[in-house]
Image (cartoon, rainbow, N blue to C red; front, side, top):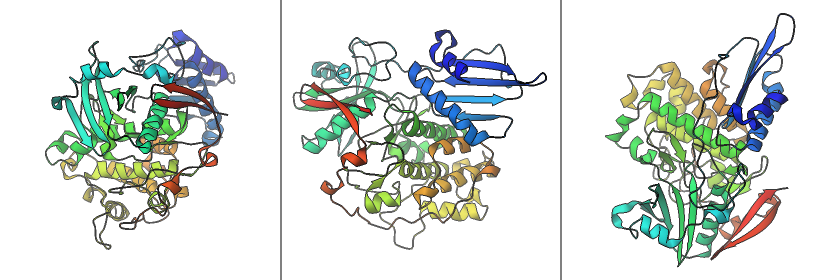
Length: 459
């Protein structure tokens, strides 16, 4: 296995893909395959595959075959030939480097923050001086514009509103976190612009709208047929798995919801908006300094009641998303009477009664199988269990999505109804994470114009 991992990660001719055959007896041959996505560096691929190989005894001990499938790599072994010997590596598109960068050693896992800076004149020219015609979206955080750089590349410019210390810290954090992330199911940060009283985040332009505008629109929702919805669900799952397990600095998104899922021209899901995201180490439960505001149907109970976030609170949000995508209905919580049945309890009831087709979006009723719908609702219910310890990890969820529904575990309890109009019990100041909560890091300080960034690397 080790030699296969090294071939995949460090042999350029292999294109992050390799197979190996080993005669274990005179009559038996072991067939092994390893693969990484091309957006990983050699060291990241090596680490991802080694972790996968190390997990094989846990998942597959005593079995004649097995597979560990992660967001950015997978390894599989069987006692039969399951691949074509003449097969060459699939070539998923590697994510290109940021448009603006300093000279850097090829293969670095992430770009230094300083290499991502755009000057203000470039962004003004790209957006036609922030013309209203180029405005894409607007909200409490600021305004998003479409822009075109001089080389023809389309960009999305998130122009932040306000000049408070909280805005400045959120800006620095989002740049730092996103500079280290590269995955096809995440909206890619191209850079930032800071100066002249402006703070802007420069992202890749995603040609379609957010999932929210399609899923809940009576006319547009017909564009989302069943196979497309499954593709979106699986893309979100892989992006979230990357954040939790495979990213250089593991991240909890903390605000996963339909309006933060973008769709590209091929309807690939891209997780966006990392303004609430926090880095984490191991299985920590962290206190997020951001106060929950507005609707909170996608937040886990522990987030709403105590401001506590973990990878399992992201799993809860994913479960809500999955059920919303299947049903075409929002999980509304904030404006319902106490005895109202929300989407989660409604999903539980239909699943428990074997009536999954009663929950599904009516536009899909003729194009999918009841057993398949039951499987996805079952996975969603497992994700939204009240006790965070009962929820599966995203690694398990990814396996469930492609696995046999008969192997799914049973949920322990009825999904919770989040208390109505509940507020976190601490003020924003009290929710500041301690050094212990965030883990111990070494810091290298980089100053860029008005902004100071800390390059963090776990000890």
